[in-house]
Image 1 (cartoon, rainbow, N blue to C red):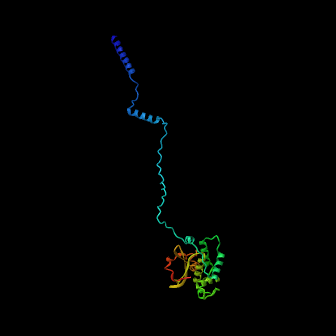
Image 2: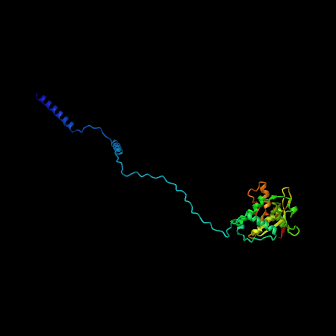
Image 3: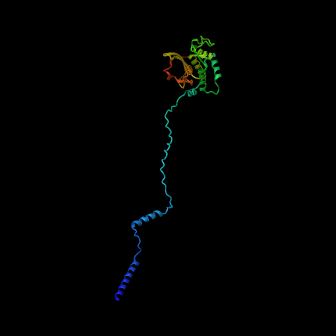
Length: 267
């Protein structure tokens, strides 16, 4: 009986011990490793990271500056400053001193021409150019005119210089050859106030060799300038001189290859 009671007592002690041991043990939870904690913390940090109130700063793309326009520089003037000389400026700047030929028939014809084709508002250049164009456009070329000098003049052919007769024949008849064209324009230029002179000699011929010719030059600012209405008329009619001014106001010293002077007419 005592043994049974002892056994029961021991069993009860063991049961109580087991119960006490179970109550003191922590709840069995899965073990979380430090790495797992870190991962969860990182994940939580990434998700729950507060949005900053400070706006993001956008870095602007670099702008390539446009090349600066250089400041204009004033060229250093050279002395003397050279400017192109034109026949216009020469005719406009040349002092004029109108002169008559002294032969009444010729002077009357020139005065009549001026009254018909010139106007008071024309400047000196316009007067020269208008008279030149009159010869180129209105006079008919007649190669044989020099063989009948004075045929269209009322002046005495024995006492009147041939240069005067050449000019008179052209203005009376409306025709002429190079002698008539150049003589008439020489006296016209003198009547307009310019220092004009007549020259005869030779020029190259289309068929080879040379051919007799007559032209004039005008002294402008101390330099001789040629005027050749006969050549401009011929070149124009061949369709090679639309402006009718190839031989208008060219430096005579530059034309030595073309004009071969023989006689400078003193009149």
